[in-house]
Amino acid sequence: MSDKFDGRVAVIGLGYIGLPTAVVLATRGVEVVGVDVNVATVEAVSEGRLPFVEPDLAAAVSGAVAMGNLTATLETPESDAFIIAVPTPFNTDHTADLSFVRAAVEQVAPRLRGGEVIVLESTSPPGTTAQVSQWLAQLRPDLTLPHEVEGVPDIHVAHCPERVLPGRIMIEMVTNDRVIGGITRRCAERAAEIYRVFCQGKLLLSDAASAEMAKLVENAYRDVNIAFANELSVIGDALHLDVWEVIRLANHHPRVNILSPGPGVGGHCIAVDPWFIVGAAPELARLVRTAREINDGKPHHVAEQVINTAGRFRTPTIACLGMAYKANIDDLRESPAVEVIETLADALPEVDIAVAEPYVNSLPDKLAQHRNITLERTAAAVDRADIVVVLVDHDQFRSLNRSLLAGKVVYDTRGVWR
Image (cartoon, rainbow, N blue to C red; front, top):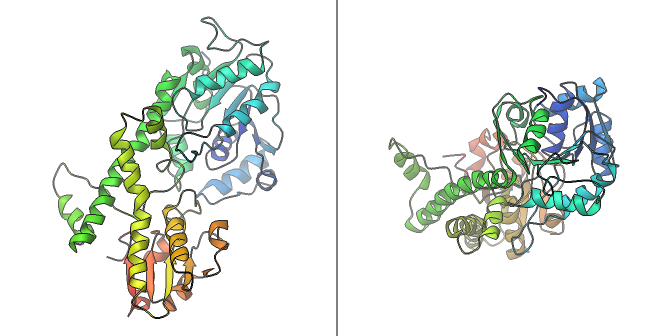
C-alpha cells in the first residue's frame, strides 16, 4: 500500500463538500479537476472565486487555482481517481433519490481505463456503493468490478462519507477522523491513499455498507437529541414554562446534556439522513422516524404561534430574522426558517413580512413568489415590525441593539436574546 496518492483526481460536484475536498487535495500538491453541471460554479472556481459562503475557503480556492493545481470544467476528464460528491436528496416518500449519483457514474464510466479508484462521498443508504459498482459493471462490461471478483479488480470502489460542520469545513476536513469503507479491503486501502494526503485524523477502514450506515447513524443520533429538545420546547409552550431555563437547570446534572431547541432542523445532513435509515428498515426505525416527525413539525408549531399573535393586530408587520438553516452561513437547504416564513406568507397573505438575512442577496424562489415578502436589512425590518421572529442565531442578530425591540412581540426560537 502506497503512503501517498500520486496522480490526478477528478471531483464530481463542486458544492459544499466537493469543492473543499478538491481544494485540500490541490493545496497539497495533487492535480485536481473539479467537475460540475452548473456553468456559474465552474466559471467562479476557474477564476479562483468561491461560489458560496464558507470561512477560510475563499483564500484556499484562490491559492489552489493560482498554483495551477485546481481547474474546473463541465466535462469529466480521464483521471486516476474519481471522488463523487453530488447531492442525494430524498423523494416525496422519503426514499433516497440517487439520480445524481447515477448521473455521475455515467459521466465517469467512459473515462475508465483500468486501475482507477472511485470514491462515493455522497451520503447514501446502505448498499449504494455496491450499486455504484454494479452500475459501472453494466456500463463497462469490459472491466472487472470489485463486487464480481475475489481477486484484484480493474476498478476499486469505496465510500468515504464527509463529517464536517458548515462554518468549520476547512478545519474539520483536515482534523476529523474519516471512515473509509470499500467493496473489498483492498478498495478501502486504495481509497485511503487519497485521504492520507490531507487527513490528520485517523483513517478507519471498514466495509462500504458499514461506512454508509455509520454516517446515517451519526446524524440520526443528533436528530433524536434535537427532537427531545424541540419536544420539550413545545411542552414548555403549553405549560407556560421557559424551556431555556428548564434546560439550563437540568443540564447541571452531571450526566445530562440537553441540546438547545430551535424552529426545526435543516441542512442536507441531519434533516435528510435519518430518513435513509427509515427507508432501509421502515418497520423497525420507530424512534428515528418519530424524531424526524417531531423536528419536521416544529416549523409549523412556530408559525402557528405567530399566526395566532398576528390576529391581535389590525394590520401587523412581521419581521423574520434569518433564512439559513444554521448560524453564519448562506446555506438554505431544508431550512426550517424558510418553511416558517413560507407558512406565514400563505396563512397571512395581507400581512407584510420583512425578512432579514445578511448572508444572501435575494429571496429563494419559494419565497420570492409571495408578494407580501420583502428582503430587508435587519435594523429596517425590526424597526417597522410589530412582531419579531428570530429564526437563525446569526452573530449579527445577537448583537442587535435591544432598544429596537421595545413595544414589540418577540418570538426568539433560538434563545438569542434571553
